[in-house]
Amino acid sequence: MVSMHSSSHASPRPLTVAIIGATGAVGKEMIAVLEDRVFPLGTLRPMASRRSAGQVVQCQGRSWFVEELPPSEAMTQGLFDGIDVVLLAVSKDLAQVVAPLAVRAGSIVVDNSSAFRMDPSTPLVVPEVNGDLLDAIRTTRRAGEGCLIANPNCSTILALVAVTPIHRLARVTRMVVSTYQAASGAGIDGMNELESQAHSFSRGEPWTTSFFGRPSLFNVFSHDSAVGADGANEEERKLLLETQRIWNDSTVGVSATCVRVPVLRAHSESINLTLERPTTESAIRLALENALGVELVDDRAANRFPEPRLASGRDNVLVGRIRMDSSQPEGRGVSLFLAGDQLRKGAALNAVQIVERLVSTTQEAGGAKSTLSALPGSGCRHKCSPTSAM
Image (cartoon, helix red, strand yellow):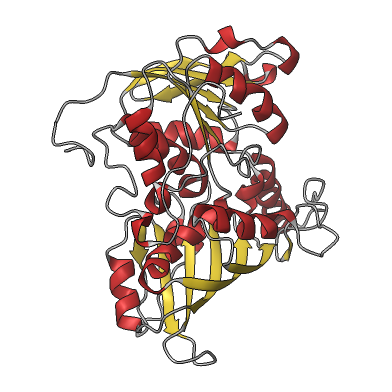
């Protein structure tokens, strides 16, 4: 496959990749993504806590032992010497310790936590949306120089992959989002509890509810993140702040309601948009059909639309239920529904695509076909250096 950034067929040198949190839900998915894609993996160094050390993971036809990650207070920059890429699938607190050390050691670091998402010196990237930031870093980054990129929240990634083509077409001024988030968004423990409840129900046994504190099966409840004084929970706040930052537009309004549903894997979102300029349903459909990372599932006759079951394990975000909103001025309102695998595109795949575009691999990196050049104020303001990302 020809590189999206070069006419050359030559692959980059094999990379040493460390996955921190390799045995968690996102870490496992990162390994699966490296397995599935044409990624120039030389050495894999999976790292996790002591209880997971010594496990064996498989990737690209080879076996790799899981290394024990030292306690935060015992970590040094030397831990990351010789590592080209560090993918972080750990808590915010641990990421704040690991990321600066790895950057100073010269690694490309992609952090899946919320630790650096609002740091103005750390790019927050969805390659299909604002991948031009990565192109600028790749052009100016010196050999051996570390850098840090933040992965957005999973719900934000899925929403913006679907909505940005419409934003480019007619500029979104307001977005109302209702999310239906799978148990897997809370990690392996959330998935295990939902499965356990299903098994217990089938056997007529009492349910375990220790993780979410309430039944997941046959239930819908507000997202299990902290609720602020304004009544918004953290997940809802992330959709607002991250959208404004990724689109580089502090005026866009986002109203979100985030809930958990009894789905094992893949989030769904109902989205209603207000547009600055009138457009048509046919123009919106064409923009989505031509967008990277989007797959239209919109068969009105058969009543077939995006479902989490169909999105699970898929790279693309499934988009459907596309219809103009007659409650808004003509041509300026549109509604849609999406389903996307939040472990895949909402976390692991997005991180790997960031690396692919930074090193310009022969794997087709998402977002190379289009950039935010048509949006006001777009462009890279970030520099990549061992210290500026902190």
